[in-house]
Length: 462
Image (cartoon, rainbow, N blue to C red):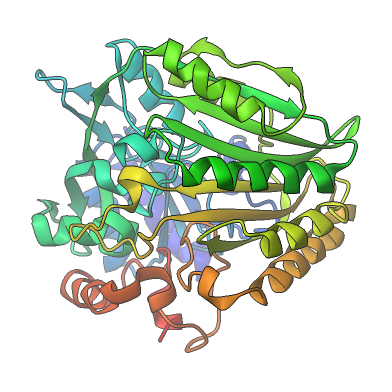
């Protein structure tokens, strides 16, 4: 059956030679197929590279009329490997990668396949910036439409909060401009309702930032983690400027386990930024500090060395209102047990400031101020896969038993473990009170579940 479908696809593509593609027998198939989740072993029917929204429309129409399932790939960083599926057509959006800044320099239109780093780089040339994540090779559309935590979010809001317009390809192939109701669904629902071929996003004047990494004395890692978070909790209680975002990271270095704090001051008022840098430095013993005046693109470039191209294993996540002494005690104890593989890490993100403002224009579910934990059970060496995953799951399970009033019920879609069995998890854990709206939009725009491989797979939630 797959061969018959492939033959039909190749005949179709011969009529549209500008749409490049690769089949399993093509020399470039393996390189095009590579995604972040190395455990995803699926062999797509073929990989196609549309050049425009019109091409995506043609491909969707063809796939539906020939009963061919398909997936959508932007950056390929989905942690469960949802960018590809066995015998499904992989629509790789990475050639639709433009960034067009509007004349008023308050917004930009971007292609559905552009990467985070390329957005930051294009805006930087015009003295502009917009919230992005910490990893430049991630697809911007996937990052933004499912939430979009990042180093500028305290001041400007999450990725979903930047979206002011969108074009999507519907399940029948029609290209439409999203109305306000659909836009609300896209802001958190991502690709559930169609293929997002273009977004219009807010941009802001910002030429330079004060950013870099502080490496903390990690000889007594558990004590360092607890000391830093106790001090940070006290400092935060006095009030923090919206321009300041920190990201704590613990990872395996050649010298052993190391705790770092990424510092981002998103303002050109460098003097005030350095004052706050001094306050953060005082929370622990800093053995190396790379914080300097730089750009958002340079920040992403610096992070690239820490992010592997692909990994084995899985990650887990929790949202906590505060890193309390109870939470810090469990985390610090488990950091010492972290599998010794460069892919295994622990990261603390924050959702505060503008990101935590009640927002009725998105379906993103968790707006209470919180710390989002990324418990990264990854391994570069497959021999370490099981130990890395076991460490992450055990840490997650222990944290789940802490004070319930401090543990938010909502999970971040992009980091949550996929639900694979129907009826085993509530949809509210992703969308909170917006569940009905998400389901209503799905019924309106994709009642036949043409986009069945989109995240999350709604059929498995209750």
